[in-house]
Image 1 (cartoon, rainbow, N blue to C red):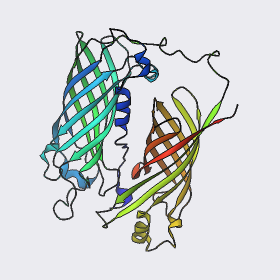
Image 2: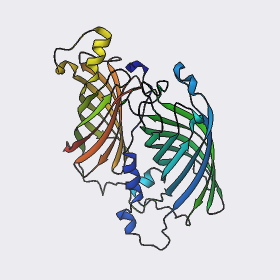
Image 3: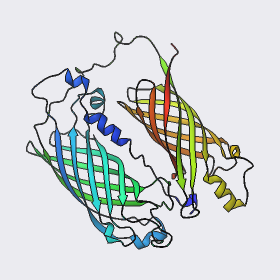
Image 4: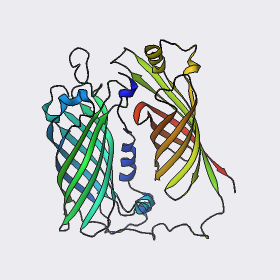
Length: 389
């Protein structure tokens, strides 16, 4: 299965759980406000959905079906206990379990997913609010591609996959404790091309849910918790950050050739803050993909003289959105060198960084070409703060 057949894949599994644990844990700032009115703000939710599988390749028409799905979740409404909660207008954070039989397909089996999520408010009514929800976690499909026993399942090449969902959720208060919601959303399963085939599964749906607050809602803490920076607070320093990192991963081309192939990348970014939430910058990258040699031989009957010819270098524009210890990264890059460049000179990267301390961070990064997933890497990096004024 060639790279050009791989679908758009924007998955970042695993590190969303770090965001969930970070936000769920008690904050030092909250501990300073020992007030009897502060409660857990926990919410339990049950949801039923009805959707269908998009046959985005003609080979996937055999999977086309309409089917229900079920979800149970537990969440926490933020109220300003940490600065990022106020800056993002008090989102809801939670974790959900999702299940569907996928129309009882004999090739796909059943789907299970556990996904940490965050809901950002788009409107601010007292009784009715519109939220945008995004979730990334771990999915399990009971059946996957097999050359002999399940060769018609060209959608998924592995049991374990990333589960991603996006949703618009209209919530209506019913009294002090109950919430009713109507939503439209999209669920996606994919393994980031770690195992092929990897067309992925896309499920648009409509849903209805009922939620119950386990305790009375907390009042919001606003600027009095941590004031905005002022001339009396600012120390006069201007800084840029230099981020240096590397990561490794692997790809399994079990649909074309047996064996695992190493992939890796190293990068350096120079970043400057443009707001309390965002930073922009420029970066340099060097990457290696062991499958390039196989594809070069299959397409052009050509082999590289050495592995250095398979190393690609590129220059990137970088954007960072920060939420406490967690940052979401988006890169748009252009290759400067490399014997085989796949689908062209332009590439994209999305990732999640988790700040381990003031200097070190962990990262999970997905690289893609023309929106099609190429490989996933996990690694560690080091941040250096440079004062220029």
